Structure formats: C-alpha cells, structure tokens
Length: 320
Image 1 (cartoon, rainbow, N blue to C red):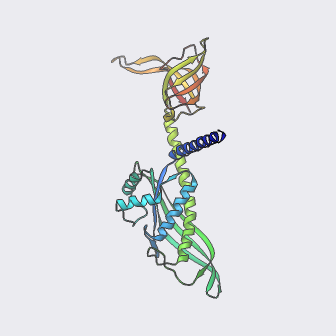
Image 2: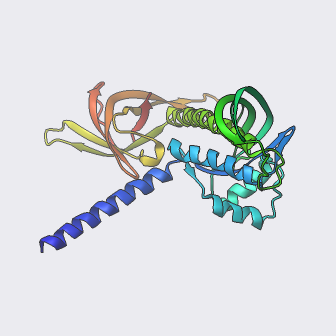
Image 3: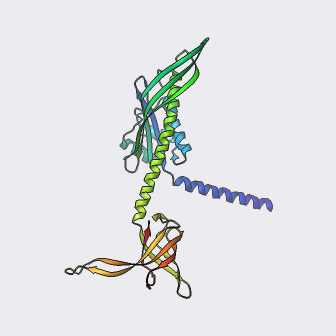
C-alpha cells in the first residue's frame, strides 16, 4: 500500500514538472537557425559545407543555452529545406524565403549568418622536430540576421568584428576540410573559435532586444487596458468587499495591478444633431487585483470616492 502511494506521488510530481516545462517553453520565441555561410576572400564556404555545419551548431547551442529561446531541431529543418529545394548558397536569406521556411517549421523567427571577412596574424613560434608551437590571432567579421515569420520584417541585424588569440600545436601539412574548403584545418578551427565568441555576444544582444520589445508591446497593450465590472460582492452590512471584472489572462492584467472604477455620468450631446458625442466618467473607486483567471479577474476595493454604489457594467481602467 505504501509503495503504491509513493508511486502515485512520483507520477503526480512528474506530471506537474512536465506541465511547468510545457508552459514555460510555450512562452518562449520559437527560433530556427538556417545556417552560416562565408563570402570572406580566401575563406568562402556554402551553407551545405562541413564548416557551415560547425558554425551553425555554435549558434544553435548558444541560443539553447541562453534559455530565452525555443530552438527548432536542426535535422527537421534540413528536411524542410530539402523539401522546398532551397539552394544552400546564402546564409542571409531574404525575408520571403525566411517566411516560407518559418511557416513550414512553425517557428516565430528564422536566424541566419554570414562571415564577410577573415584576417590572420601570426606571432612567434618554436619548432620541435616536425611539430610547431605557435601563437596566432584571428579576426572575423560576421553578420547575424533574424527575420520575423509573421511579418517578414528584419527583427534584428548586427555585424560583429571579433578577434581571438590562440596558442596550439599544428602539423605543417595543410589538411582538407569537408565540403570543398581549401584552407587548413588549423585556420578553420581558429575561425570557429572567433565565431563562438561572436555567437555569445550576438545572442546576448538579441535576447536583450527581444525582451525590451516584448516589454514595450506589453506596455502598449496595457496602456489602453479597459473593461467593466461583471459582478459585485459585498458584506451583509452593504460594505463592498470585492469586484469581478472581465479582464482575464489574455489581457495582460496581473496580480497587484491597480484599477480605477468609473461610473458613466452626463452625456455630451451635439446641440444640432442630438447625437451623443461622449459621456462624462466619474471616478468612484480604486481597487487592487488579487486574482487573475482565464476570463476574469478579482479585485479588492481600497479607496472609495463619493457615495455611488459600484454596480455591474461600471467601467474599469488599468492604472500604470
């Protein structure tokens, strides 16, 4: 009996955690990384090359580890790319192509990148037989662009110039790189070292910009937030305790928010046409939101103005 109870407790906890993870991921922007190519003189590669795969993985992993994005699985994205016969020539895809890929993948944002310049500078070296110990510095210029699938607009675009120094062991022989790249394996590794640094800075900046834009959208949405009273609860002595409004979860109303409660006053009428142009609004109370549900919110009245009773259909406005 005890074992059965323990198993049920564990199952309940697992289901609870899965629900939390599901809700959390659903709130994150869904991102697909198309690829990273290079047009840098002497260091070019296409999106279907081995080096592009490694550079793309660096960007994908950085987005995943950042925690502010839900990243689309790369293998599934490749299937979509093959399905629409997209040519792997350019990392910086045009908005129309990005929208098409994003719609098929069911994501919010498509991200791509391009390396435009690579520079190497070598320092001193020590030769030990056939092996050389040396220090080198690599500079990479890379552009990363994010396109919003719903609108096709360029949501984010930045070019980063980063350098990294590296001391390592390398053979004198120039090694071929998968995907038809002619430069050495050591050079490829150096480039990837810098791309990793660029990805860290780009994702941090991108995540910050997304958070700022989301807050701005939330503020704009909440700035004009209005509703009305749908129920009034009072004590037996007639003292008002709480009110229910039609502002639910989807409106952005939050626990702790304050609302003003208004009663419609005198109508303002056009003297010639007798058309009602507007109505005066009389502030009768201020309340604080204590609970938010799917289709309504509950508020406790904290301050009253005048002797007017609060009734159903009285208007409410969010105080920012």
